[in-house]
Length: 360
Ligand code: SAH
Ligand code: SF4
Image (cartoon, rainbow, N blue to C red; front, side, top):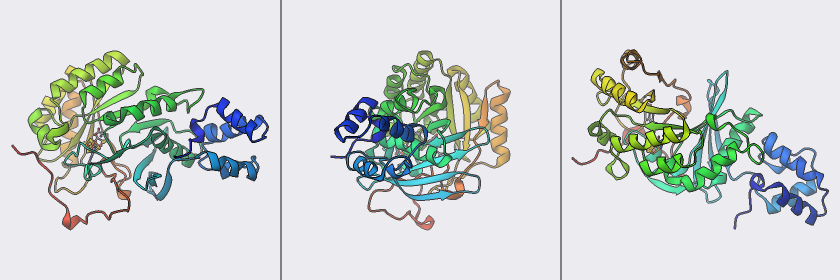
C-alpha cells in the first residue's frame, strides 16, 4: 500500500505520529510550515528539522506523489514537467509565467478517453485516472519552482476532468482550503471540459465559484462531429443547458474555448453563428489558433484569426485570442502527450496519422 501524503495528513494525526516517535509537538508546526507555506517537495527541504526525524518521516509518509523526470524550460518562462507516478505512468504539467500572475496547467488523467481529432493528449486513449494527491502535487511542483504558492490553476492539461470528478473535486477543495490546504481563491481556478453534461451538473452541485470553460470548437453539431468522436460527444443544446445550470448555481460566467482550424470552423459565417451561441449562453470566448500536433490541419493566418475575433467583439462579446506560449517545448494546448510506462517514443512527423473522423 502506498504511504499517505504528508500534505494531506491533518495536524492532529501528525501530532499523534510525532508523539508516538518521541518527538516534541512543535515539530508539527515546523513540518506543516514547510509543506504548506514553503512548498517543500522533499523531507530534505526541511533545513531546521533533524536528519533522523526526516528519515523517520520518509518511512511513513510520501512528500510528493510525483517524481519529475523531465523538466523543460522555454525562453518565455514556461516550464513543462513530465513526472513519473508510483506505477510508472507519466503525467505532464505546465507553468505559464506572466508579469502579473502565474498559472499552472494541470492534468487529471493519464491519457484521455475523448480523443479529439486535433489533440495529442487523447492519442493513446485513457490509461487511468489521476488520484487527488497526484492532481494536487502538480500544483505543488509548480509552486516549488516559483518559490511561493501559485496564483492560478487551470485544469486544462491531459484528460477530461468531468470523467474524474471523484478525485478532482476533493483536490480542488484542498487547493482552496484556507486552513488545511493551499488557500487558492476558487475564482482563480478554471475547469475545462469537452462538454459532458452530467459532469457539468455534478460540478454545479458543489456550488463553488470555480470557473468553467467549455471546449466548444464549433458553432453547430455537424462541424463538431468532425472534431470530437461520437462516443463522448453530446449535442450542443444539451451541453449549453448544463452550462446555464452551472452559471446559475455558481454565479460564474462560462468561457467558450474555440480551437481555430483553417477550412474547418474559421469562416466569417462560423464566427457569426458562434457569436449567437455565446450571446445565448452569456459566455466569453477564448480563441485558440490550432497548435501543431500529428494532423495535417493548420491554424488560420493571423489576419483570419483577427477577423474572426473582430466579428465576435463587434457583436458585443468579450473575446480574446490565447497567446501561444511554450510551443517550442511542446507545452501549448493539446501538445501534452500521455505516456505509459515503459516510455514510448513520439510518432515521428512523417508517420503521423491523418485526423480521426467519425464515419458518416
Ligand atoms: N479535456 C478538457 C481539458 C484539457 S484540453 C477539454 O478538452 O476541455 C484543454 C484545451 O486545449 C481544450 O480547449 C482543447 O480543445 C485545447 N486543445 C487541444 N488540442 C489542441 C491543439 N492542438 N491546439 C490548440 N488547442 C488544443
Ligand atoms: Fe481529451 Fe481535451 Fe484533448 Fe479532447 S481536447 S482529447 S477532451 S484532453
